[in-house]
Image 1 (cartoon, helix red, strand yellow):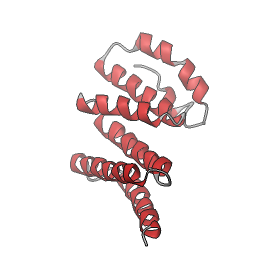
Image 2 (cartoon, rainbow, N blue to C red; image 1 turned 135 degrees about the vertical axis):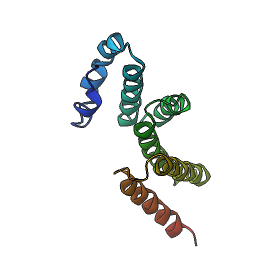
Image 3 (cartoon, rainbow, N blue to C red; image 1 turned 180 degrees about the vertical axis):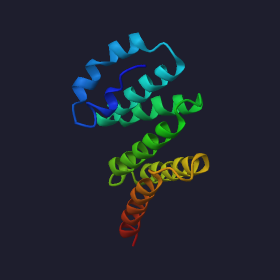
Amino acid sequence: MVRRPDFVDLDLGDINAAERLLPELGAKAWTPSDCALLEHTKARIAFARKDLERSKELLQKEIALGRNLLPNLGLLAQVECALFDQNLRDFPAMAGLALKSAEDTLAKIIELDSANRFIEILQSSIVDRKKKVQKRTP
């Protein structure tokens, strides 16, 4: 089993330490499960570095392959919310698309596991952003 730096170093805010472990993780990732965890870790690192498009790209690829679905969908919803935040002021249409994508992603999570403990957190995050849009609309 591959060591998961994403839950050690990234949660502690040490992006560089997590990133330094990627070559070692890649060398040890022999099983499909290990490879899926490696790709999720890469997506989390990109998210932590605010490279949202890269994170989204990695996650969409893994989701299309059907790997590590719930964690990847959860992170994708967070990425879409971050893209909303990033684009709201200057590109409101793009922000709206990101928010819709976050909602669609959350719907997939609910469809797969309606008891998932992160649903409420993601729902709250989406609702908060919808309120921002409503405040901006005259």
